[in-house]
Length: 84
Image (tube, rainbow, N blue to C red; front, side):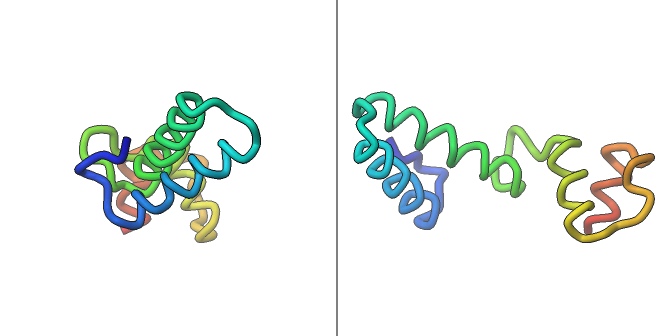
């Protein structure tokens, strides 16, 4: 079920996750669903997905990882600016 908007990296990731889930005994349909949801979530968190964008929680987590001070009081727009 790789999407046309996915990069080749995301397609490989999808296939890897799908195969891992099949090896764990999941049905093919369930493995495809898990793989697609995982890839789409990671695309959204990294800002690759056009429509969804990153959530405030994802921006906050990135700011925390980069040790940006004052992040707890920032709005979503402020977090986006701070991370640029």
